[in-house]
Image (cartoon, rainbow, N blue to C red; front, side, top):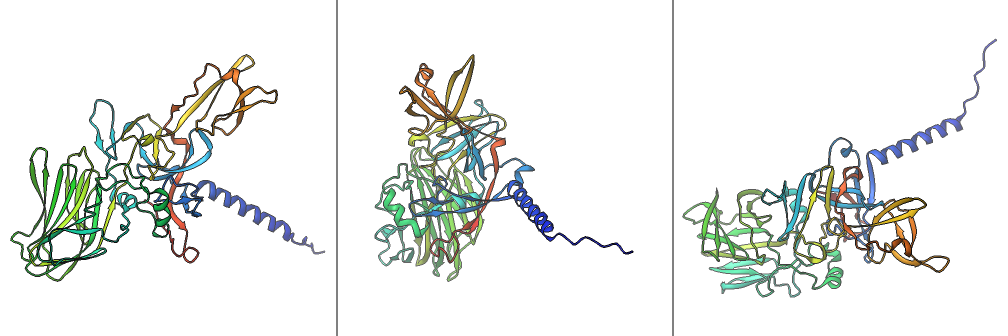
Length: 465
């Protein structure tokens, strides 16, 4: 007699397949990739999160890499708040284990210990480009104005038609360039943020970059780009078609001491009628000049105590055409409460996080721990949480009418602490700027939303650096 096989249980196969799919999805989310919505503006304009304009970037978070390596400086990382571990944050990692970190003159500085001198932290070019903030056009549309000669010069927005010798300066009548809150924001949101945060700039900014394109006329001897920072003057000379010397150079002069030096770059000269892309910058105490995307001169410079800066371009000879001129400033780091400086020491196994929106970011500079010691029977219990003025702790009343404090600890558990238990204890928080390694979850690698055509004026897709 032949043996009959039981009919297949398709429902069982479907349940098994669905269960496996859920398990794989959870493992993928936990160990590999996750989607994160940016809820606040602490990383603006790098990552947008603004409820008033309903703009919330979505980022792809790589959770796999940090299972095999430690985080690196300047990566954008996702981590649990060290004083509120139910809260996930996104910041840029700037401070590494075993060093001291310092903010001064808008820059980041580091040293291994108090016996060593401070050295400026220089970021990789890709990170600098990510953090640069293009300056929006002024209201009247005339960012550039002639300041010397140039009777035949014509200026139209970001274009200068220079005929004859002369010089033009960027925002010559606007005073020092400052760290305006809205600098670098997406064009579609610029007017909203300019209206909301007008006049929020506090510090003069010295770290600037100028980009554009240039066409030199025949018989032009040189094109000069002058960048100032406090008492320092940096004058780049780019040889023209009729230059006696075909070597790019920068003259560095300190007006206080009268000292002067000349640094030479590569041999290069403009070709009459040829369009060339150029860029020059003073970022993190280093001068740089680029032609066609290639760096042809660099020079480390002394730190300027004053940060007031300006850009001037000039021509020796018949003239040149400048187009697509763009000026951007670097992020200007400041201490808590708008203080110009801040320092911390980082022990092994810990990191320091700062937001790119240094004027409005609750990051390592501002975190404070609130601690209460409460008697529970014969045992003293220490409660620790995130001190947030007006939010945690909050004065309240118990059911019997007695005064108390509502306090959420770092695990998210809420406690009602009677006044009698709080008396004699400080309600002043202790600085707590450190993020332990085990709280770092992953790194933000890309923005994938907003995307065309859902927000055509705010297309934000791209890699993060």
